[in-house]
Length: 253
Ligand code: PGA
Picture 1: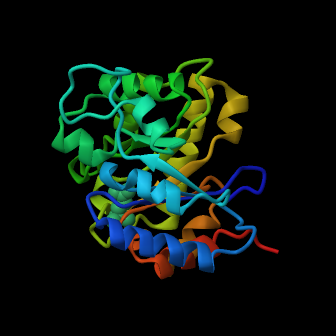
Picture 2: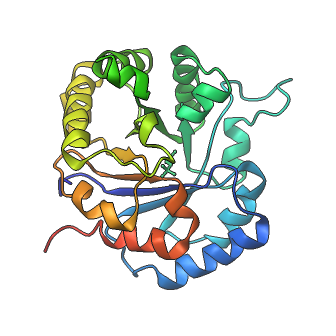
């Protein structure tokens, strides 16, 4: 973690929780969160929970985001959700290109780029997810894959965003990347972003790690110089685990 950059701790609830559980989580989170947390905190609930969560979290310490966005502002796209609808539901962030969407919904790099553009156009901050599969890592293609995923999305004059490195083999597997491995990739991503969006923005952009982050492994990851926070799936469903990770984001005194 670099003290000049904003630390971001985000919870990706995926297709979990019902409204009552979500409201209970939000009450517990706000009651136990520090008055001035060291990190920006974001929750990404599924679409039917968004408005409830945004209302329950009407608090400057926590932001709400959607898990996906359609590139169009409105139209005949059954099952999709647009940027203006996300804003209307209380979102300020949106995930773009999560590996589960890339895999389950055949999202191409090009579609992820259009989603990120739509987010910016509608005033949402995109959190763009990249990461290699186990097969790609074993074949020595990690940096090539990441390079392709970045080059499809970013160019000069890109708006404000966050990047999440989520190795697909680490998601939901219990097998987190080691701090050294994650740092190596994050340094590579920042260097490539510097080429694509310019050195100044690349210096400031938060690059989050995601993939089996838990209270037990967060401390070793967050001290790495290019890891600026986490995108957390499983452990973000339990407010006490999520809070324990947020507390570890405090800069060393
Ligand atoms: P996980 O998920 O923390 O359960 O591995 C991370 C993610 O997919 O965002």
